[in-house]
Image (cartoon, rainbow, N blue to C red; front, side, top):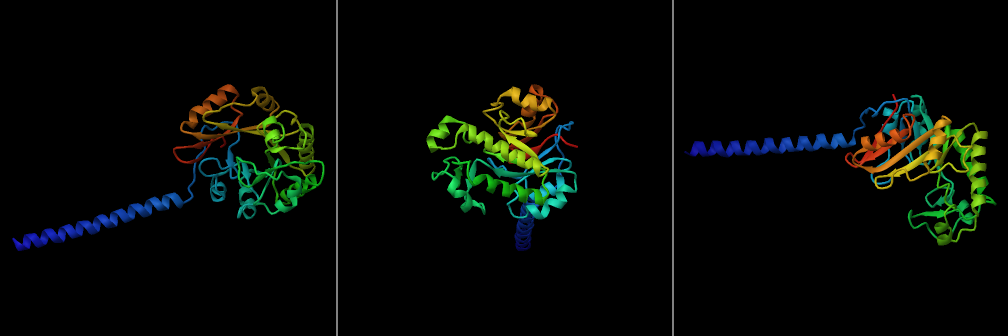
Length: 292
């Protein structure tokens, strides 16, 4: 009886050890899976270009530079050029035939940027309540144009192909104008982004508009931000006119559990030339469509 009891105790201890080792292996495997950059395939391969987005973070995470280097091929790749590790990765990303776009906000000043102190005299003193650390541009007829052109000069020197203009509609809406007491007129804001686009063209790059195309016919493409509960909120005819002119039209769709259905809805509304990227709530990252 004692031998049997001892055998049972030893077996139980052995089983506990084996179970502990097994759990540890599973934990390590899961951890490695989360941290390892893996190759992926784009969804819904068509004639449209794939899109990778390192700049926009809505609910989860943006595309990481390492993932872009591994996976992006002949795609439109939007980068925040002022983030760590981006500029050093440009040669590798371009080697795969990608078109590189640099993100800049032309309608706000961001207090984490190196040139924020230079921008401050041309900004509102009240912070944008939707995005902490950002302040609306309040004056476009003085030195801010030169500062933005200096950014564009640097972006050109780094080897980018596009400049994507975020917040270019900041002065067009009455509620924002009243809430922040904007001094810049609507007409001045339009002349401002048109002048900056003309300068981008002068530097040999293309301009990407953001969320609208009215008064932006000189732009080479447009990116629209779409939401689970607010799809196709923009003027459809504007997006369609860019597609008909063979300009790049991108939809970045956020917070979605059925990205395939949304992509199908949009391509049925427009056509297969539409470029699409979707923030998938199941995998908590972007899912990439189109491409090779």
